[in-house]
Length: 53
Image (cartoon, rainbow, N blue to C red; front, side, top):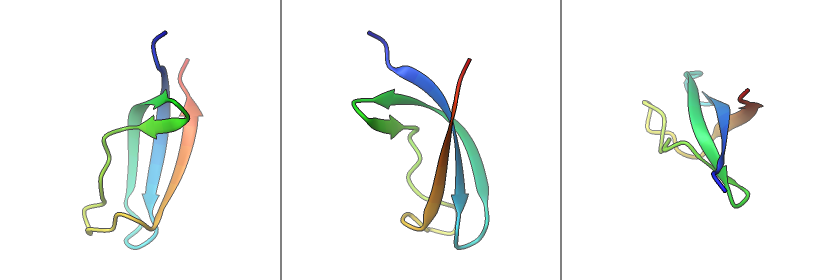
């Protein structure tokens, strides 16, 4: 079975930058390839997922 594709919005709580990415839901986690914000923040992020249709 192929992993479900989802749209993810990531907002940095340090600088306010917003990223909209596509990812895959696999085994209860989301993989988008996102590592850190351009301000080097990797921990203080708001992540919101949206279904793809």
